[in-house]
Length: 303
Image (tube, rainbow, N blue to C red; front, side, top):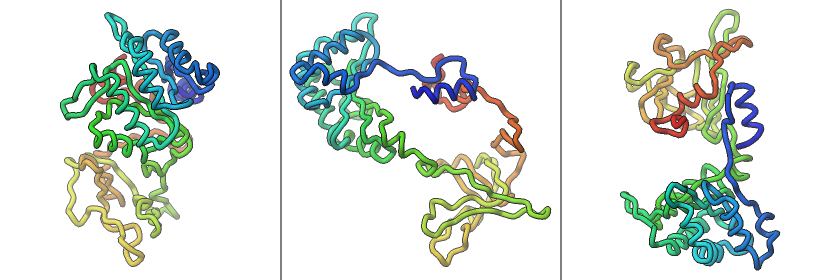
């Protein structure tokens, strides 16, 4: 729901409607301005102002555990439970915003499961799940390393992953870069005086940054023939061959393979040329990209 991102989707990907949206959500000053003694009234006001749909409320202004036990889990309990009634559907999302994310999330889910125990269910995997009218969101300290730690701790404590949602806090906004998923665009081939030359990098200080060599094609593994000795093997130390050995780079699931060093079959290449010499060859819309990236019954197939 970043304004700049929404404008980018409209300008460059021809989005015909807003590509993202937000929900009613409090921030600290909208709670703390009520004062310590009236924190619960500020929280009640959020529930009353937005009686249906999603609403998120920051809960750590003073004591997040007290807020979960005494406010959400006691004084405001019936208001929260009443958000799902008849044709009306609503959900409160409790937001902690400080402390150790792993410890805090486990403690909060534990308290809420105790306070709403009459409606807590056990999933088919044997984990406890909060009722549908309440969940927890963690945004503070969230990055690609902390999320698995939080979910792992919840699993070990007997709680389902669906108790949580994750927000894009400062760590995600500031720490996302091309190394997050080891994704970078590198030159792999150059032509000098009419002769093709492989181009690659393979720093000895980081094996994960070795790039692929030569002309590349991405093919389905089942349609690609190759010997075991053709599989890519990175160099192990400073005495190894720079760039590694072999030209078949298989995906983690083994379904696809990048064939390097010009050894691939261009007729089986799954890559589509989009841009060449300053000319845009493919102009896909945001809707087309989302449809291609979506999974069965996923978020973008719902209309």
